[in-house]
Length: 488
Ligand code: NAP
Image (cartoon, rainbow, N blue to C red; front, side, top):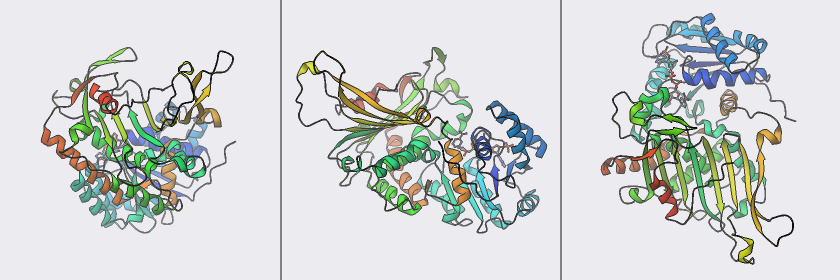
């Protein structure tokens, strides 16, 4: 049985970039699902904004098709569509903003969420114009999509410019990984069970692995991606946030700043990776042509217009946290495009037993591992050693205590954006990045980028459909460990 979600008060959600990929694929379906679940009151408004010259009817028709393709029931879709409005507006031009402000002001009591689902180059223009039209009052909130900058300096420019219009409590920097059920479950597992926390330290944990593997290539985001690369696109935000959730000290409560203070301490305690050690601790890769699910797929350079790039589509690195809890425990991170399978997971590998009482015929003793799967099929597995059932002597087997959330709870897990969008409406920033977290993450990433730039080496090639360059395997095997391969 699932508890019914609590409805929120009617609100206005303005989506700048309302016709874009993120809006149509994630944000509007998320709102639709919350509406169907009774959480979004019918008096709420969702206002799409983009340059395209649509009207309300045209926008509703566009969204109707998207939701129908996603399997939405037509009576529910028809009930949802009247919430939608559309206003054509160019964020860089002054025209149209009076009409926009008048539309928003029709509901002065509503909480106003301005979701900037556009290229980050527009963030400052949009915020300035919202401010100059008086739309940054106490009931307004702004949501910033990643990437916030491409290095510390550019991130600071955006953060400070937005900060001149919206206060920190009004600013929600979204990292949708933090809205995933499994990530929140990490909090429940760590701090809701007496079992794990006493073992959650360098005395008992051998190492941690975080993998975010995609099978997709560039698709339609080629321009953005080629300027960013895997380190900026995935590690600076999602993967460091996951690392923080694993490594942080127990916060005193779930109050937003209690959690974020602890995450920030982890970021500050990361050992620097720079010119001196970047070659030992990081691997950059770029995919060549290969095959995924039996289909030939092109290489990265073939997907680019000009066919030249030194951008990495894969990165593996070994991070260490210099504090009492984690001293000497490596955190291996790897992420890439066009890898063998789509998989995001955190693996906490415990140390071996100190002494084996079993003889060789029992088989090898394996590490206990706690595997938190973020996608696909969110769930948690705890790998334990047991005796193989039946006669034949004491033979050991390594088996998972397996909890797939879909199987255990019989429901499809809500998309992360569903949870996070309503957290913004409620004004709960716990699962959003505070300004100092974004800055600290860039402060750790910048020297890696600088060291790569100074070394000037091209990324190592890997075949699409593989697990990245062989150097990424060597990175972990040098330490006598292997990447987790229990992907069933
Ligand atoms: P997109 O498909 O290119 O959409 C961009 C949207 O912005 C369109 O609606 C576009 O419509 C509008 N737009 C562009 N210039 C504008 C202007 N001057 N004034 C007003 N509207 C303008 O991009 P996206 O993939 O949705 O990504 C949006 C943001 O989310 C980016 O920051 C991206 O990095 C981030 N993000 C995306 C994803 C994803 O899965 N797509 C995931 C994580 C983060 P018009 O051209 O009609 O104006």
